[in-house]
Amino acid sequence: MHLRMTILPVMALLTMCWSCDKQSEKLYDAAAIEQLDMLTETIGALTSCSFILTTTNVKDGNAEAQHTSTNDIYLRGPDKMYIYTHNAPIRKAYYYNGTRLAVLRFDEKTYDEIDAPDNIIKTIDEVHNVYGVDFPAADFFYPTLTDDMMADFDTIAMVQNTIVDGVGCQQIYATNAEHAVFIAIDPKQHLPMLLEIFGKGDKAGEVYSGVFSGWKLNPKLPDTMFNFTAPEGTTKAALLTKPIN
View: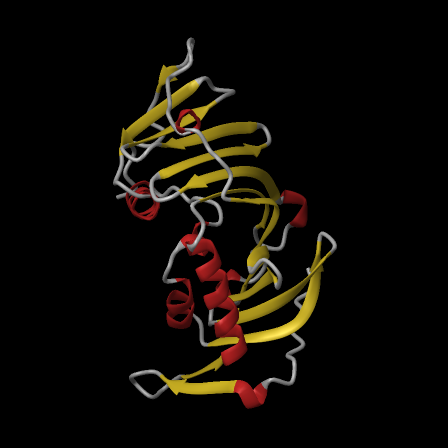
């Protein structure tokens, strides 16, 4: 996959800052930081949203072994989440209602559920840290997105515009020793349209791509969407309750 690394002539806007040990230079484009802030503000102002995220993962540069999944995601702040994932042949769904998180694997007819914190972000953090579960597109819903990226990446800059599903998007490039990241943002809605992550160094050959589509802002999402009841014929299994440590 081609890396679009043509930097626009924005060097006059770059703000240089130094790490505490003075050994590594960090370069941040003020326009790129502003775009991240606007994206964060837009998402933070939503009471609810839904979208489709289509992801592709490639390991070790082996495109023939890539994994593609489609994720239908529904969020209602601050404490409701439903995700349906189809990663052939696996179909599963996560239900979070503010007190409990459940997962249902349709084809295996198994489920699991656990007590969960009282908001989406805390739940995502805890379940990831304890059980190793990754939730698609989670980073974009953190109010600390800009600060987190500035802490993790040495360079954040605007690069050439790109087109995603017919939409002309502004594009941010961020890099550190392990990854090169591209984020395409719809300049009218200030919402993410594409996330690409390319591995570097020991991670060379690893590629992640996530395409966002079907954004719906502030839809009415009923409580029933987020409440889980085990379907008849399913069996409880340790799908969530295996700590990674």
